View 1 (spheres, one colour):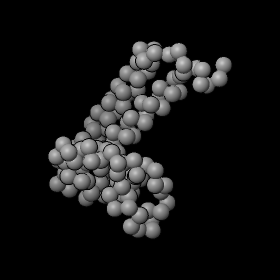
View 2: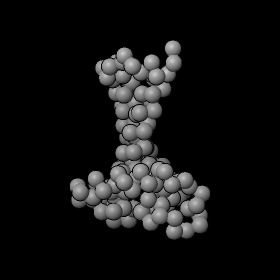
View 3: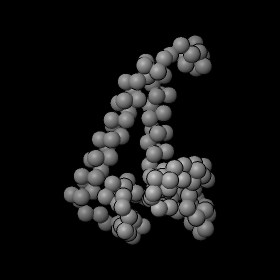
View 4: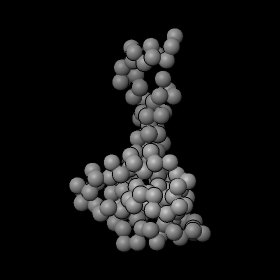
Length: 134
């Protein structure tokens, strides 16, 4: 049985439990990240500087670590600095295409870019869980 025929007869309801489980685990991980971000002091404050005066800071700061700042910067400004050349353009390009959806809802460019990145990352996680389940 090849991979293509494995997807043919399945219905959406067959895959619903894994999609539901993947979504719940992402939500619980996000809640735990918020809780522990408030309980444990950070040693790195670059996200606080990046998210100054942000209306979504409380919800996204725990998830904005390490390379996330570089990807957000590339999605907003492109490859402006040589340090950004270490990152491939696919993910920032998808973020840039997805973030205008949040600008329509009234978020500024930085917040809409961050929300777009979070949605894309979580959507990719759920899709990957579904594909691996199949």
